[in-house]
Length: 267
Image 1 (spheres, rainbow, N blue to C red):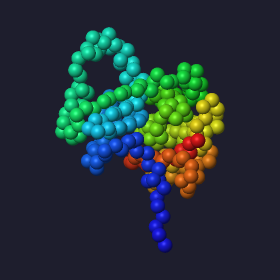
Image 2: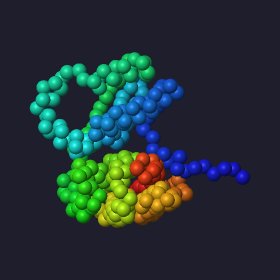
Image 3: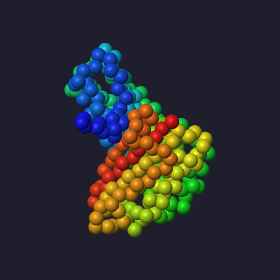
Image 4: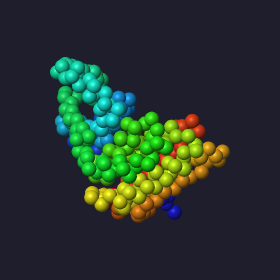
């Protein structure tokens, strides 16, 4: 009997890469390039939601879809007048592009286009999400109001198919990473209400038919590892006829390493 293929690895979400006169070297460096930019922007409080690459001849076209966190936007408002005077100057990002272009890709030109996803947020929908999750503000988001605002915005982008599954799982891991063990139960109730609202509650732009989240680790401070499984809607994981997205993430906390596995059934 033949070995069954792992559907989770088949559904792993990779950057969108269009192949035109594409070589193995360009493919490897393009993946490393996406990881480099996501890590660099993450340290600057900017999330890279999508990254698309197009190779035409000896040129590279790069499209970045970014999300600025609430803390970053607050700092930009304070320094808006100072930075407006030096926008025409050569900055550090252009220097990185030139060095990476000469040392790795050996391309003639790199075209960059950046799309800020904060412009596509709906204020009325954000108010609805805010009042639904307001009761968890003191228990889970104490002294972390910018993280609470980021979760509300990313939840709306996730519903409108403007956010990758891995980016939404990343914001959930940030909420969980600093919680003490006596608040794990409160976090699970927060997940149940949030995921049920994603599948059944928000009917304006419904794009999710079902979600499944599995958390593995020493939950609630127990000595043995346990699993928390949350399912909402229909998530058939043993078929490839439906559009099911899968991603996994390791979260490092003071209680050890926790594993997050996330399945999403899209329309």
